[in-house]
Image (cartoon, rainbow, N blue to C red):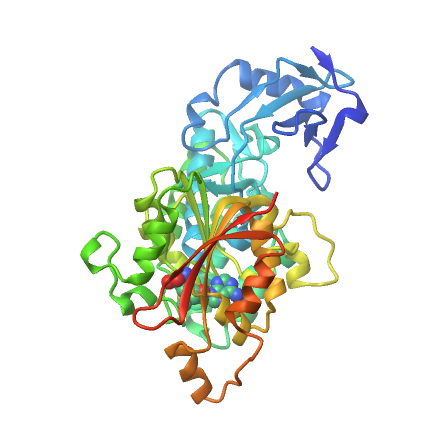
Length: 465
Ligand SMILES: C[S@@+](CC[C@H](N)C(=O)[O-])C[C@H]1O[C@@H](n2cnc3c(N)ncnc32)[C@H](O)[C@@H]1O
């Protein structure tokens, strides 16, 4: 056993946790460890030696073992965690994801109760979604079952899951996302829920709060293990049955409108054919689809290239991402993220004066191939971005290749914008865009993506080394 000295430790968890802290070790950056402080050592030793948690690795917990290589400077226990790729945070989950996260946490808690254990808290930051499953990450929160449901568990659960999902029944999640980034562990309390929901939906607000308080009081009155199981099963059924509504959004029904079918090769248009040709021989394993809507082109890339193993789809349209998450089994992960936030620290994006604790999207999701189709013109004409800002963000997200679509000022849709009074931007042209790309990338090929006229193109680039 090697003893870990202070200068070999890289601390990565924020805040104060009496049980321990997450660390990386210099020279072993690919591994993730947790120091368990000495007062808790005996409990965790018992927990792992009894193998109680092993059956939960498949569905609930991130796989973890006691390190057989390291001990702390004062003989603290060191746990070694499996690394979950592509981790995400509550402010990036779609509304359906938030609801599923809550149901998952209840299932995990119920499984732990059956093993004589419980969770100290039910913080949404203890969970992540990756590879089409949820993970519970925070071993420091596992305790011997006190046969009650703690105040902290109840508060977190209602603030992070139950009230937000009640809010999603009547509204998009944008406000929640903003608050989640700002208040981190307690985005919604009863007061905030009331404030944001009552004036538009008084009946829904009062009945939701009534129902929530009914469950809160039930949770508080629990004194036995069987009582815990009964109340949490009731809460699970309640949360599961809350139906999220899909108010129409600008892009929510995009592909239904287009009537396209990935599986039907005879129906492929020029863009689909060009994309399939471009990706066919790329040895890319990970794909990031920016502004991917419900994942139509992600699916096409996967179909055309069997090297692709994981796909992360992002879009800022809540409805599109909800659908992608629910329906598209090809997608390993989905995330509601605004392109403009990808290279920025998330709290800073929402609240510029705040100090960040969470790594930004680009640094967590750097992928072999980045797809960015039919997005640049929207970012330039409607969201005031420059070529420089767009290329810089894509560069940070890409390990090696990008396929980016350029829609010129001659395009039919853009011309309609001009008729509506949008001012033509003269510097917005293919030459200028290519020049910006060439600062960081080599252009490998350009293929048409428009149907009849040469007004849309796919550009395949490789990052300069
Ligand atoms: C024209 S659709 C293109 C969808 C898909 N990439 C394709 O080529 O068919 C544009 C998409 O970009 C998304 N979008 C627009 N601005 C965005 C932004 N700032 N951040 C993330 N997504 C954005 C829209 O929600 C929409 O799904």
